[in-house]
Image (cartoon, rainbow, N blue to C red):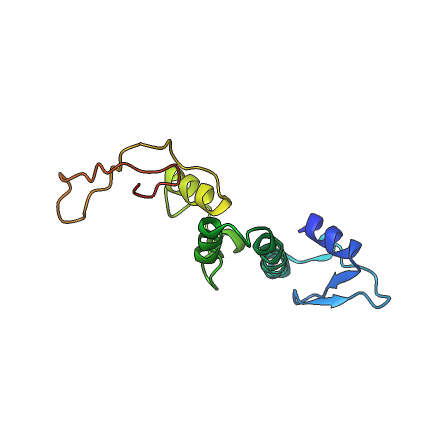
Length: 143
């Protein structure tokens, strides 16, 4: 939160106590040390969403001619698709495994997930003995 407040302040944008953004207009910037815990959670969430939107616009400009990555960005930028990253954790215990988190994060960031030609190990819920084994590309999609 402290870093986000500093970055926004450098653009003359300040955060109000409810987490909304405003132009500085001569006011002193909010300090992270002045926030109560309940306010910090809300401000963190608002800042993360604002920073995410700004970054998305910049990335879309870069991907104008890259159809696959633009499609990936579209799938990762829905109204709730990034809540698992921008929301402050409500629990100290994660609800999904580290492996799944890493795969999701790599896909979201555009980092290859596996080596090309790796075989899919997906099994349907109804028949756990039946493994897909289709060849995949480096993004984890069936080739």
